[in-house]
Length: 170
Image (cartoon, rainbow, N blue to C red; front, side, top):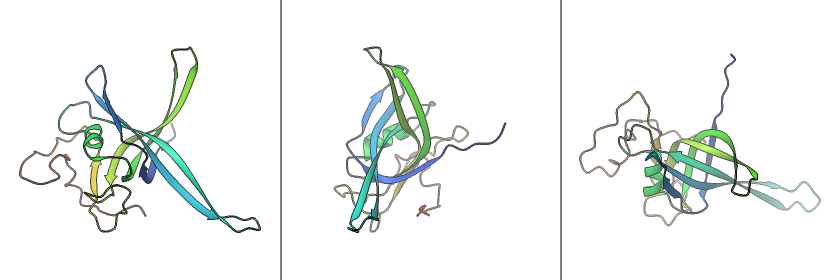
């Protein structure tokens, strides 16, 4: 079988406070919208600036092992409307039948990595410059979470401080 890749990288602003819910099996899932924008100069005679905003539905799950803090917990605790986020994940298409028997479709970004770019204490929507980023990834099934301890403000982020690569993709 040929190799394939389903990978999405987004940097945008959270449109509303995330909704976090528990599943019947005890897992947690966070649902939030992320806005990305692009702008260009109109090719017409007016030469005006045009802008288009795309909205992305992002889904973050906790790991299945129940150890440490998962992505849904991190979104619940640290993400709010207006925050600037880096999100990496994959596109997932789903369909279901609603209560009226209609077939519904949705496109979602299944979040695997999340970096909070808004400075701590900012009212949201701030730029990365001047603030430290906070990074979280979906749990690696083969690794154990880092032990919690000390007064580090990042102790809620398992393994977040192990990754020393601070390069941003732009």
